[in-house]
Length: 219
Image (cartoon, rainbow, N blue to C red; front, side, top):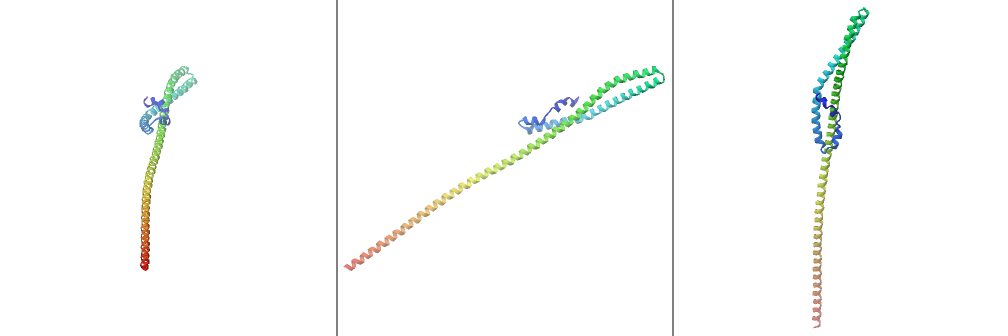
């Protein structure tokens, strides 16, 4: 009977259990959403017909019960009037209506069950869609957090690179300054040596001058 033939399959589905087992829950959610939307559309399309069947079955059942009650009343009146033959006819018609009532009762029970089933499927499909929407939102939230963390990790990695570059530059600068200081120190030492040499040369000159002066006096 259309979508009702899938009642058991729809009712036994556990959305969260299925999503927990799949490798790509986001794709599975999209697929299930399409299937659920299709099933929900079928449920809504057939619900009006099923409810109409239930109303017709209920009306036929109510009319049969009313007819039985009426025939019982007529039979009682006929007995009171002393017309047993007529009363017997009313009771025979009542018996036929009683048999009919059993059939109408079965039809009404089936129509009621179908209507209840449609409502249960409608509620189940709506619940499943709500769960899927919640899981989809949860996945999107986790994805957003993951992307944000990746961005932070990337920034941290770039920061590490910049720190390494800065350290390298600082190390090269320190080495350059050390070499410059060494060179500056060497120049100062050379200057000192030249100054000392010049001083020593001046002392020799003075000593030579003194000797020459003494020699001149002696001669």
